[in-house]
Length: 209
View 1 (tube, rainbow, N blue to C red):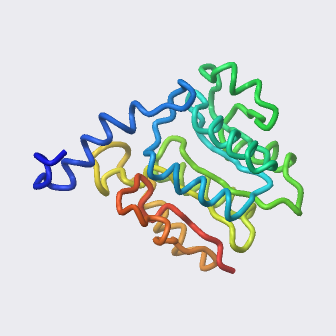
View 2: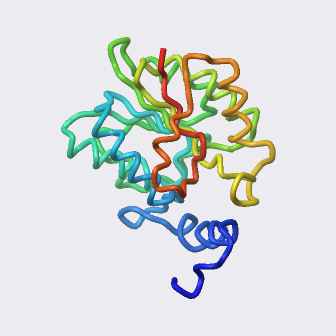
């Protein structure tokens, strides 16, 4: 590490993307998450104690399994995983009693998701699907009503073209700006970026009204 202290941050981020994020796993299952961000997730889970976590974009299921294990430790919480395809979800994920998987486009499947949530439930939503501007904004607009005051909607990978040159452009970062311009009841909680390095810049959206 010490020989790279003068390396520009954008080069460091690119190396972290290739060496860490793309190869991160939980219980041997791929997650593609930065460990700093997932540490923030467990802080949020402990603080918020959500009744339901909706993860949109599940890959092989590593991150939703990790969230389920955190809920096991909390003694509460259900998880709903939504993805276009769950063909590669690991069997241990499918078998976890807290996890329900719904296959299909997230916006098209919103009614199916909402049927699993009661009006009294506190909800945390994590968006990690295609990362296009249009899709991210559509998911934000569709799922934001599930969030109660004080709750969070996390948009992942807003680092695309705002730290590393990967993914669609415009992408999640621009979708966040567009969403916040239309929704005065949410704000980006930059205090959740306390580790300074995050793959979700501006992406911790807190409902304040």
